[in-house]
Amino acid sequence: MGYACPVCDVEEADAVHLANHLAITASLGREEHREWLAEHAPDWSDRSPEELGEIVAPHAEEIDTPDFEDSGHGHERGRPGSLEEGIARQSRQPGRGAMTAEAKDVLREAAELTREMQSSSESDGDGDGDEPVSSPDDADSDVDGNGNA
Image 1 (cartoon, helix red, strand yellow):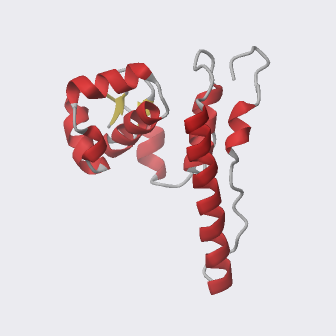
Image 2 (cartoon, one colour):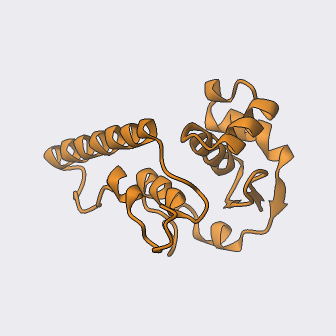
């Protein structure tokens, strides 16, 4: 059983995923998500995903999510493989508007930290280094050609 975001109806696998969606989307400047969190969880930025999930889940519609339940935490087709990719994909959806300069800076920093972490893992022999890292600049591209980047 999953949840539909109470703001935009996006499907999330569980309460923690719902909390992450709401917090990340609000942090990227999406006012509707920020206002919803301010009303229902005023201290949302100080909460862990698990704590925030307990607060927001009762306000969200429970939905059947067989794809999430059957696949565990693997990356099924159509789902982002990284946080940066997921954020970039959300920002490219119609009606989402342009990403703020602050959000782009945060994503650039996150991508750089991810690259550093992967490089460190490679030098330690712990990682294979084959995972691509999304660039925040990817979020600026007009994927669908309709002007809604």
